[in-house]
Image 1 (cartoon, rainbow, N blue to C red):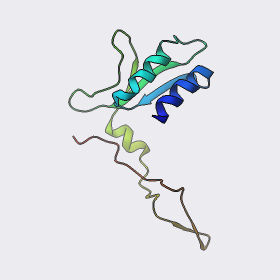
Image 2 (image 1 turned 45 degrees about the horizontal axis):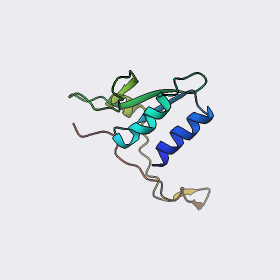
Image 3 (image 1 turned 30 degrees about the vertical axis):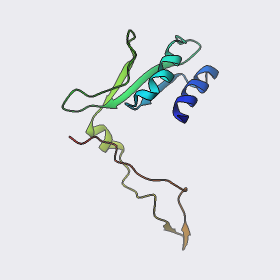
Length: 112
């Protein structure tokens, strides 16, 4: 819910030029549609991103409109993947340095 609210609120304020929602959660479609209906200049342009799979991938869309989709592959994921487990404290300069509370890694690629 916070993503949808921020996408609309920040879009109305003109705080970003291009808003890209990387999700297939259809609960975000109303937020996408709201910002899309602002029709850009001076408001942001809307785009979506989704994982490219062997089968047709799913993506957010709004019927009757054309929204650019950034299709990302497994190679794209591997190029930026950070294998660090942020749930564990790290040793740094002889003392513990705790990571932000609740930081966790989630698998981002769908099963193929």
